[in-house]
Amino acid sequence: MIVLASSSPRRQRLLDMLGIPHLVDPAQVEECRQPGESPKAMAVRLATEKARCVALRHSDNPVLAADTVVVVDDRVLGKPAGPAEAEEMLGHLAGRDHRVITAVALALPGAEVLHRCDVTRVWFRSLSPALIRAYVATGEPLDKAGSYGVQGYGAVLVERVEGDFFGVMGLPLRLVVELLEAAGQPYRFTR
Image 1 (cartoon, helix red, strand yellow):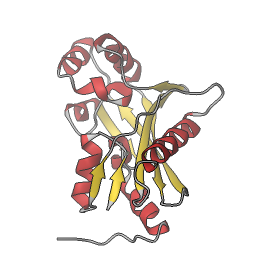
Image 2 (cartoon, one colour; image 1 turned 90 degrees about the vertical axis):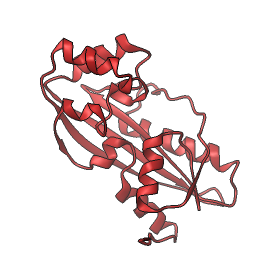
Image 3 (cartoon, helix red, strand yellow; image 1 turned 60 degrees about the horizontal axis):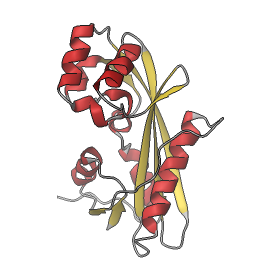
Image 4 (cartoon, one colour; image 1 turned 135 degrees about the vertical axis):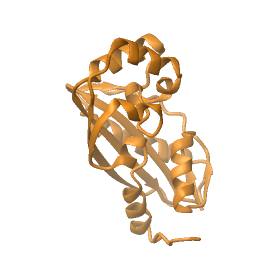
């Protein structure tokens, strides 16, 4: 049994899909970029902080945490503060590519934290202001880094993905399995 340090229903569903038993105990960590910090270093730091924070409450179980950042022109696009910011972000992403960086950390009993990081490139098609407004009106983008969910309505915004689709969703499953294997808990297929 692992502890998932996230309230993300997408991450929970992905673990369920693989049959990985887990408890949910979200981390409360301030998600901001430190001066001079690269987006990748930010994602790794935040995933590690989340895992460590929740591990303090679960000393007997491994704790899995993740952090996803969307990056365009070295600008990190976090979760929008509201519909207007979501529209602005989506307008900035329209018709171009960006990177989605997802770091995954596994805190083991005894304080060791292992981590991995995935970088995926995503291209958006051209988007009209009307399409952006209609998408934002669904409410889907309001709790997602970069203001879109590739696994939902946001799929219509995406032209192509180069890399790990699950990383764009917020939990690169191959990295989760790698971390579990590195921790001596090899993945087993279940029925």
